[in-house]
Length: 229
Image (tube, rainbow, N blue to C red; front, side, top):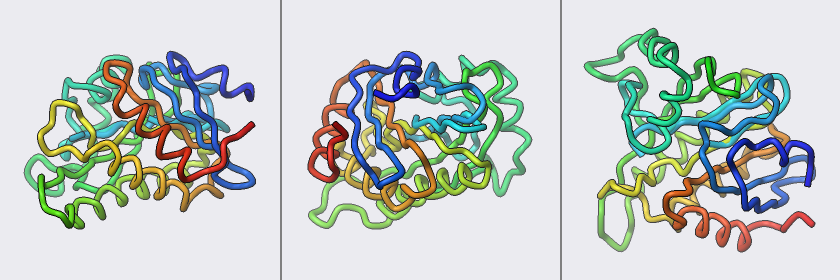
């Protein structure tokens, strides 16, 4: 296990896979708000509506967010805001409103400092709601979910982040419009694979409160990628 694997805060039960010759995929369960690599080159992604970390010179967390980028108070986003302190909410308010209660449209992302978090930055990604039922799924929602991951990774690359941590965007347990775990995992893993050459490590840190996402992400990764010995 690499030195960075030993520093992932509260995360454990790590699954490690090769995304490319230069990039590892790491899947664990834990509290993404405590995840970090070195506090200077890692980041977490927070997903609103619905945390992978970078290690180099910027800590980055991807946070699942709402379009208003206001604290949702539930799941990963609420934990991220609580751990970061009020400065994070104030920073989110600095983004201009594009329309009423919308600072970041679905499928897009914004970046802020991490403030009191152990990572240097938070990426706020807004995931879509998925219409239930139908044999064809929801192609529009799938495209928006891929876009949320791609825009998060674009911001990370632009900010020289080499290690990033994601939650399972659009997989809030209580939501009736979340993506099924298997579908969400397939979309997430195939999308981050497209950007593997831009990063050294891509993490998914999935919640401890229910094992569905972690077990599903791990199963899907074993089907798609080579396990790192």
